[in-house]
Image 1 (tube, rainbow, N blue to C red):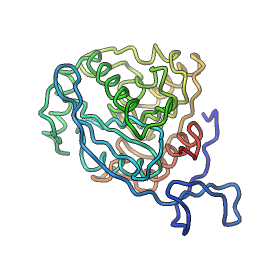
Image 2 (cartoon, helix red, strand yellow):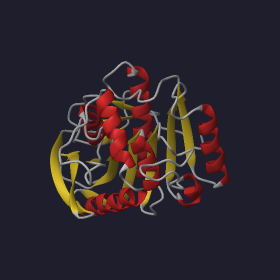
Image 3 (cartoon, rainbow, N blue to C red):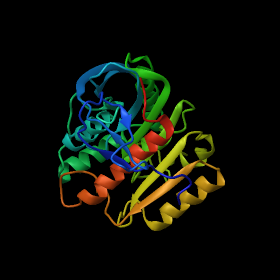
Image 4 (cartoon, helix red, strand yellow):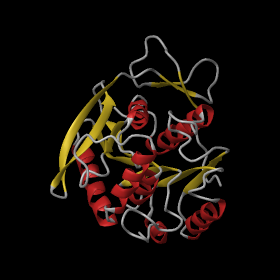
Length: 286
């Protein structure tokens, strides 16, 4: 269900255009082109729940004020695919920060491998983490971004993959989060999140005041059709300003390693995110 249109966004190398500037040209007034944007990356530790929460932060190198996006990983934490996605997002003119979601149970810098043991470990870490801790950590991450020198006032968004899609959905409950995209978020339809059997996320959908985009894979066994329909029904009942994109793909189709990676669907789904954020925050930030 589409309740608003996503703009067509293309990237080109255009001479004599200041980094991050939007222009309309090439005889196509319906398409907005953006000049390339160099980024910087950093790792910061911020206090959260009595232990340091490590965050990977990517931001445009050019001086200015930009929207900020809190980015949530899947159960494997900050692996290469997640860091590449966060860095790519920053290149479109955003301060993007990805926290380690298991910082209370894993040492800083823990990257869980993509294998059966890693999957068991990631799921086990989730089962040790109550929703209240995820919520506390979210507010700490958002408050960090609010105070970041490159972040524009009142320009916060969220995104996430898998369990991170559910965490992003909960970030949308925050009144200062204006735009959120959830990629194949697990547990939203049945309530399961971390140690809690029912986080009550969907029941609180009426608290979402910003725009929301839900992205699914039709072959995802973790969120079957009945689950997607339950989410859609509740969002409609709650009168959330949302849209849905369904791709003929599997769970984790955006993770650029492994047999489920679908490059074409991943690129389009990434463009969906940029389109959402452009719709909400606009193309000019300085």
